[in-house]
Length: 439
Image (cartoon, rainbow, N blue to C red):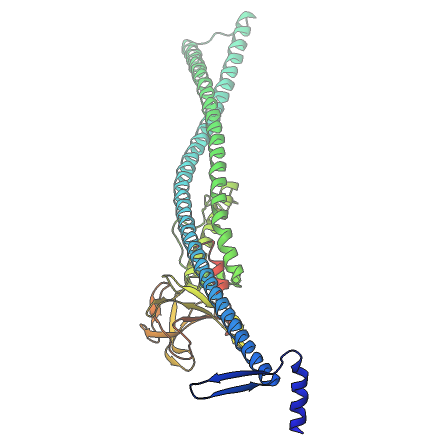
């Protein structure tokens, strides 16, 4: 059976590969090796297989070398772009901080100017009221003097009429002297009243001119106040809107956060105390309401800044690094944090004010530090090579917690960083990206 199958195979290959003989000659004899068609076919197939395998292996090696070079170049480009972006964000943060400081300085200067102008305006208002009161008193006195003058004139006319009619009126010498003295007194009083009236008219004209000047100056002051208030409102809006957006983008409620911060900062007084200009229970004027609105907004900005230091809005690393893994599903399970890779021993910093609630070894995480922040937020710093803090220690944003390592379940040197809000893990990049336009 085997011989018959071999014969059929030889017959099939014989047309293409006829039988050949390979002669081997020596000094004493000559031998030959018979190469059947099947043997030749097997030899050709083996040679072709070796050549094909060599070509495929060389191609794979060549493509791998090209691919690895491209990946490295791409990684270098991404690292360069990321570092450039970090530098740009840092410069923008410094610029925004300087703008906020300038706005604060302008606001303080404007408050001083408003206080000075309000004092001047109140003094001018008091002066105007005094002048109006003086004018009223002088007018009352003038009316009284005119009335007495008119009565004296009527009495004089009655006496002259009686004398002209020849009535029997023979005053005694004492009565005549009294009448003469009365007439002289009334004449002098009338002259004094006339002089006083002229002085009052001049004083009233001067007071009216002063009042008009005061009203014009008050109008200019109001216009300056409007301009100052508009600039302050714009500055407050520019400072407040980005911080409000930062907390909303991070998933935090600004109203609840402001109430919580205010409950812990209940002191009163200082430049941000609401303005009051009346002690008689009167409603504040428009400028007072507008100034109080600006002061409340400035108070909100201060609360936002306090809250920003207590929430984890900063990066845990200050030196160069690269992202190696983000928040989300990975290898069939949930990855609850973000991984930052850098050199061994790179310092790790807390991202917000808080209290260390755990500092030690935890299975899987290796050397781990947990920090409790305000608003129910907890941050995790895992796989560290060294821990510099202890449980119960209070830390501020930017304080060093330890150094980067590869402890626990780790494939290389990196920091595993987590943020938990209300006991649930959230994407740490929400906080980092939300603060990129503010800090």
